Each structure stands twice: as structure tokens, then as C-alpha cells.
Length: 455
Image 1 (cartoon, rainbow, N blue to C red):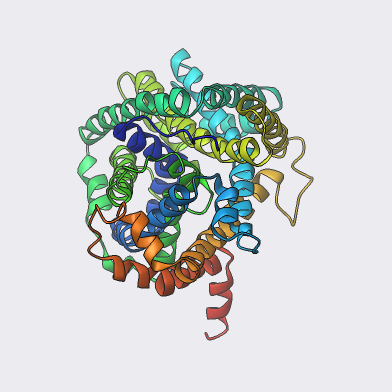
Image 2: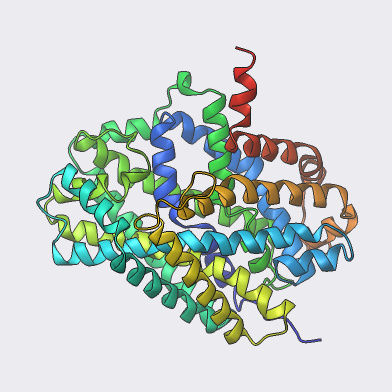
């Protein structure tokens, strides 16, 4: 049997796995979710959910990946051969592939904005002009597709270079640069006039803002921020060596991932309040509102350029991990050389990404259940496949896996203490599936439908 490749160092494990978790969800989704859900109150809920939900589920996926030493689909074939549990793995692989179908499009937008910032094209425009130009660009045919294909090519190059020479080496460069840029932008943002209002919004909670919707939104953001349920963590942990401390790695990755989201908030909200922009701007915060903010700063083009490089790096670490999920599956399950497997995945995602991009423009009239192809891929993965997969993972480990095997893997055969194992085991069996199930129902809008019947 061929020995499975592993990451070459502990720092490689940490940076690669942090890169797997960190993405546009931290720098794009988290700030606007915090903005529309009341600021610091949402932050407290988010941190609580990260601790009680995200961390244990991440640790569980680490167990599955390293114990099976397989890709996301193959893992369940090894651990529960001949059963229907393999549907969890197939769900993860398919989710990762479908996410790439629209994620590459958004990632491509970051390259457009890098070029515009470098050329000074983002200077001297009104908020209305930013909104109009973004709409015109995202709905056009050629430029979005060109940048999307270029971004796919960057990702493909890293993937074909392998686990050590590609993913690990890229992570050792990308993640430190990403954190450096975050810190530089944080320092600039907190020195703006009236920055303290933005920091107060971020860190001074108004507990009256907390309601069931905010709690469920915080739980959902924690869940998606850590890339749970899409096969990435299972795939990456299958490359962990037997000496890797799974508990410590899960804690370190969770802390660093949350830190990136928090720093993104420190960058955005002082700037937003400094220029009198509503923090509830929503998803367009990054591509419409922030260019307006940067254009009003001294050396605005420089700050815009730095920010969009940051956004592109975050997107790249995510596309690498998502691509690896699909590539590892094709490579191992179909006994195909890695380069060919990666090429198949890249070419297929080009097709899906092109259709996604065109669905925002010339194909917008062609819908699936009333959604454009871009929005459909987003909806079916984020609201159905990821929470469904995460819930089934918890149920599988809680009911199917022998506790002795689980404990042995998580303690490196007893060499690493796990003081809260019984609490963790109870949580995974009884609490986590219910909590994730609530996120699932909320994302589908069923909780609002049910509660409305009692009003």
C-alpha cells in the first residue's frame, strides 16, 4: 500500500489548515453579517458558537481525516464500509466543487479591483458611480470571465505542485503575508477620525440586540467560517502525521481563524463610521462601500490596493483547499495521477464558473427555482449541503464510532491528555446535531415559518 503523503512540519500543518478555514467568509461575509446583526452583540454570540460548536466539530473532522487517511468520500468508505454513511463524504466533495463554481467568480473580482486600485481608477468617484460600475463590471461578459480563469489557473498551479511543495509551501507564504496586511490596515483604520465610534460598535455590546435571529446567524457564521461540512478539514487532516496534536491544532486554527475575522472588523467599521456610512450596508460592503471609503483617504489608491490584495490572498487559500477536496477524491477514488485529476477539476470548474458569471448578466433570465445559477450554487451549498453534512458528521461520530477508537486517535494513543473527552463525546452525540439542525432549519427559513404560526 502506498504511504500517504503528509505535511512536512508543524507550522505547515497550522498555516495550511488556517488557510483552509480563512477565506472570503472572514473578510467579506463576517463584517457585513456583524453589521446587519447589531455589532458587538453578534460578536459575542459568534465567539460563543465558535467555542461550543465550531471547535468540537472541527476536532471531529480532524479525527475522521487522520484516522481514515483518505479523501472526504473515501474516509467514510473506510470507517463504515458498505453503508449509506458514505453519502456524507460525497456530499462534502460535491459541495466543495459547487462552491468553487461561484467562489472563483467572486475571487476573480478581487483581481479586477487590484488592477483598478493600482491604476488609480478607483479615485474621485461618488458612491453611486461605484455601485453602477460594479454592477456593469459583474454583469459584463469578458472581463469577469477573464479574471475568473486567471484565478483558477493560480489555484491549479498550487494544486498540481502537490501537498508539500504546493499547498504547504503556498500556505507558508500566503498566511504570514495575509496577517501582515491585516495588521497594517488595522493600524491605518484605527487612526482615522471618529474611529472610536466604529470600535465601540464592534466591541461595546447592546444586549437588547440579541434575539433568536441573531443567535442563529451567529451560529451559522461560526459554522461556515471554519469551513465545516465541506470536506476541506477531513481532506487536510488526512495529511496530518501521527505525531500531530489534533486538540492543539484545532484550538490554534480556531483562534487564528476567528482573529482574522475580528481584524477584518477592526479594519472596516472604524473606516465606515469615520466617513458616515451605514454599517448595515450588507454584502456590497467590500466592493461598493469600501472603495468609496478608500477614495477619501490620503494615498487612497495604495490602501485600496493593499486591501484587495488581502482579499485575493484570502480567496486563494480557500480555493486551494476546496480544489484539493475534489482533486484528492478524483485522484484516489479513480486511481488517476494527481496532475490529471487536478486538470479535470479545474476544467470542470471553469465551465461552472463561466455559467455563474454569465448568470449575473446575459443569462440572468434563466433561473433555477427563481434563482440565477450563481445564487443557486450559493444557496444549495450554504443553506443545505454544508449544515446537512456537518449534522450527519456529528451523528456519525456520536453513534457509529467506538469511543475507545475516538479517544485513542484524539489523544495520540494516550500520549496527549484529553481532560474533557466525556463532555466532548456527550456534546457530539446529543447537542451538536440539534444545534446544527437549528442552523439548517433557520437557513431554509423554516424556523420563521414555524414561529409565525404562533403569532
